[in-house]
Image (cartoon, rainbow, N blue to C red):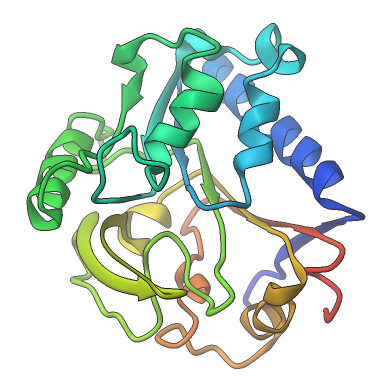
Length: 245
């Protein structure tokens, strides 16, 4: 029997950001207590920017075990880190630099390489973090978003990928912004211990209802591909995104 999704709804974006920050704090603290480190994979886009600002502030400076966290990325655009479209660059500006996180804790995708080369290089990097029973790491906490077309990470509707690949090159045009990208795949994302979808905004409400309550059609709605094998999946939503549920 399929598990019912864990859906948590918050009145507004600010409350949602605070709840996701607390979830991150708890997950990273537990991982450090149990395994001595926390492996975290982050998404970009506009939704988590306020969350990143919050995590980089004094509110979380003293409570999160920053020295034991290793940061990875779910996806990246093929742009240099100083570009405003760089997922890593945005997080560096809001969190890594203010908190003076050591470079050896930061494992960014190389947006300056052609996408196929960057994907191969990142897959090689991830293999250095594999656990005893598998070649790739089990992330302790993964942050995902969802686009109004149902995409997540850089996995877009209609795209199929090699099942055993952890990282793929993507050539996509989303909301009129063509871009070469690199993305983790469900193969590695579904090994995570905890995955959080953070979704906000009215324009995502109809798609969110389809993803959570509609027909299972992962080719059209890639967010449906995320079903952790032996981990927790939590949907954290603001009120307008959840208005049709």
